[in-house]
Length: 107
Image (cartoon, rainbow, N blue to C red; front, side, top):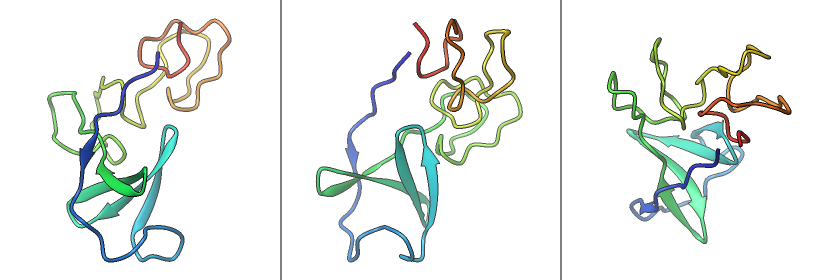
């Protein structure tokens, strides 16, 4: 399953995020998020968007940094595959016949 990324443009930046910019970089699905104070930014078409917020109900953290123990949010980095053929995180699952609703590649 592929999830649409909300387009919430963040405030203007005085620098370009990237290696050695001074902000923590986190790989989140198909993009890199940069932790910038209480914001989590990703580059998009020449500007930065705020990344998605966890939908699990137990927190209001970014999906790139969520650490909820019982998280079932489909866009969080740590959601565990439920297909029965693996024990990997949904973001890393490569099972050919995966039916897990939170994996990116699920049918």
